[in-house]
Length: 84
Image 1: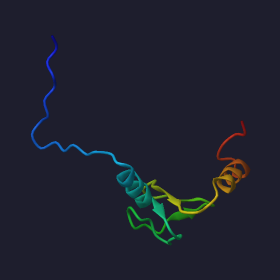
Image 2: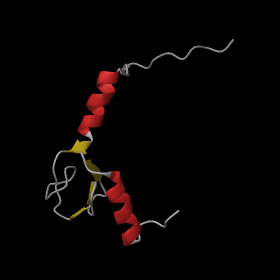
Image 3: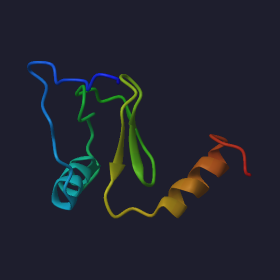
Image 4: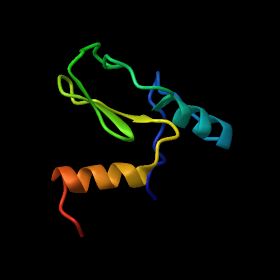
């Protein structure tokens, strides 16, 4: 019979409830565009229709309430991806 794995000291068990999932998702969006990266503070950022992309650290942050259809059109027109 296989042994049941035991928790290592210092580990944390987090229960995923709908409220916690929504709370985590809300932290991943920006309400408005900023002129600096939220991760590293660099001002070397590109503004896209639905995202803000930091060219220094590579962070991509989703902007809240922005249509992903506009982002897809932006990516296709700028050559960032090939139409499929």
